[in-house]
Image (tube, rainbow over all chains, first blue to last red; front, side, top):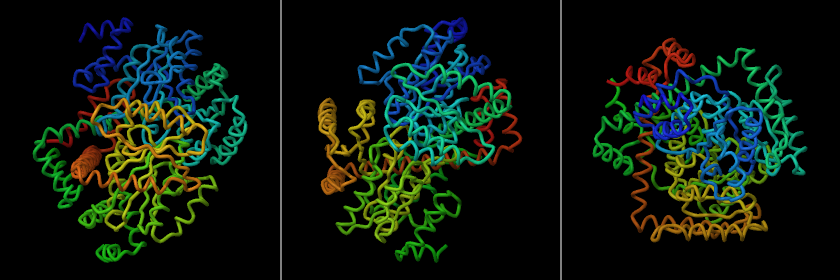
Amino acid sequence: MDDLVERFLAGERRALARIISRVENNTPEGREYVRALFPHSGKAHIVGITGGAGSGKSTLTGALAREMRNRGYQVGIVAVDPSSPFTHGAILGDRIRMQDLALDPGVFMRSMAGRGALGGLAPAIDDVVSVMDSFGFDYVLIETVGAGQDEVEIAGTALSTVLVNNPGTGDDIQALKAGIIEIADILVVNKADHPGADVLVSQLQALLSLAPAGSRRPPILKTTAIKGEGLGKLLDAIDAHRKELETSGDLAARLREDARHAVLSIARAILLEKIRQATPEAELEGLVAKVAARELDPHTAAERLAAAVSA
Amino acid sequence: MDDLVERFLAGERRALARIISRVENNTPEGREYVRALFPHSGKAHIVGITGGAGSGKSTLTGALAREMRNRGYQVGIVAVDPSSPFTHGAILGDRIRMQDLALDPGVFMRSMAGRGALGGLAPAIDDVVSVMDSFGFDYVLIETVGAGQDEVEIAGTALSTVLVNNPGTGDDIQALKAGIIEIADILVVNKADHPGADVLVSQLQALLSLAPAGSRRPPILKTTAIKGEGLGKLLDAIDAHRKELETSGDLAARLREDARHAVLSIARAILLEKIRQATPEAELEGLVAKVAARELDPHTAAERLAAAVSA
């Protein structure tokens, strides 16, 4: 392990790739790596890029990484999306568009399935991001689909969250209304060459004007990621948001919030593992069969399991 | 409490609404209601309807509920989506389209935000579905956005899962490739009047032909939910799937899987609550501050929290 850590700290990409593989599988060995490398983290700017299906967020993530590379920065990318073209993608055009990044030694990409065992999701993403941060990337981009619980958890990890909107559908406006806008630090209208783009910008402006007085108004930017347009301004806005966090003191608060979230979600995973260890599989199966037969309610069954673990 | 349960069992909708409000807030009182009503559950057919933003799944859910009503069935709807028009929706057209259902005494709708405290999501949805089931609805529809962890958890609760695809984007095919198709019992191509619909059907057929020999091939159906077209065949397919589950013995296995999932997720929530009780807020804050300052790694901090709870 020491040897791999040493090579990692010397900047060897193969060591990074190996450590991430161990970390994302959430093994005790993987956790030792997170522990060893954790003191080296905290320098990267973590940027969340979230948006619905068809918003072009994968293409935007790629284009933003290219802009960062043009300015001489090193970039880590974590794609948390089962449909991300970064690895699983079936559409040839996407793969070709990403190929230059895949071959660039200043970029490191990793795709995570965004699913797994009960409660297993969040800690592994946090750990992979933390390891990339420790490696010395200037930016770590987390690409995630913008819906449900996950994106809120990822917004917890990111220091700047970019919400990508698509002029093609009306769904985004609804999502914004429902509160997703609260997690967005920067709003992007992608596919700015689409006829509906300016209408969407106006709608977003109208929506933001309804926010309580004194609350921060996220900037609205237009990009056409597929043509590489608007990325310079987006990166400027991300850097400006980072500075804003630093000068307002919000950065410290966000880092504490992240830490709280990470600690509690890992503790939860540890306790779930303890449940599985404390209860023989046959006993668990017996409880489950009773619940399935409606002889026992799930809360009573769960309390029995929890009692076997807690003092 | 007994009075409210009695009125619930007598079919009083106001009692149902009150009990659901208590259950979704996940209070000890709410859990007592779940416990009391649980023996009455297990009769409804639980149908998950999942799909990306813009797939029209809300409209499809409404249209499917209407078809069920036309056949004389009682329907419960749980919308787990922050952008669902069932309650939060801002788009007037959607609200008007749903109004007939909102006024129908044979339909009961509830929207859940799909987010909340760490790990708080899944148990509350299970409980609300269980309460609706106990009330005597023939079907309970769970509408959820199809991405990330959530939809997999909801597929755990549903007995038949309908995956709604939209000919407008290429994203669905990618998502399918990545494994979401594994949770789908029925595939729907909605917006069948869209020029790309037949191409999408062919693509889905091609994709399904790649499945391992002997595995079940979910049927592919075309609907135009906004015009109410194709819903009869969809409901027939849902009923056929239910029968298939019953005759193959898979129903018992699914009910056991659901029970297992529910029990473990509640146990996890109980233990998280115990952590919060066992650790004074000041101590938790102290650990979190050390993690934020990179003086302590999150795994070590989490282990200390977990140790305070477990024997």
